[in-house]
Length: 156
Image (cartoon, rainbow, N blue to C red; front, side, top):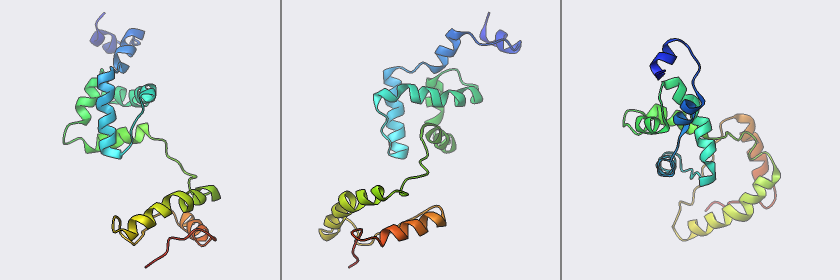
């Protein structure tokens, strides 16, 4: 029975057809890795193969595509900025509790800020530090933590 015949009668897809849809060769995985890195600065390790196929599978079904290769061909088109953003959203995990724990600020003060200070002193980075937050409660919390002893990024 052909695919179009099965679909036209509302029959279920075979296991083989579902495997075809999610097939991702190592070469195609590398293309996705490079695209995701280029678009979002995220490097997917090889062991994230299943994560990529699993999270993108729904997009393939919604768009009526038959393979990961078709999806890659689609999202690499110049006019597909929105779909690339949707793909990035599908594969990322949104962290909502980062910078709510003192250890996060300890990490900044012990690892990130000293490096930035050195880079600013040598002219490798601007001396001004700008902070953005998506919600006012987080800003209030960030300011409170930033005033904590030991967490300083001095101004010039």
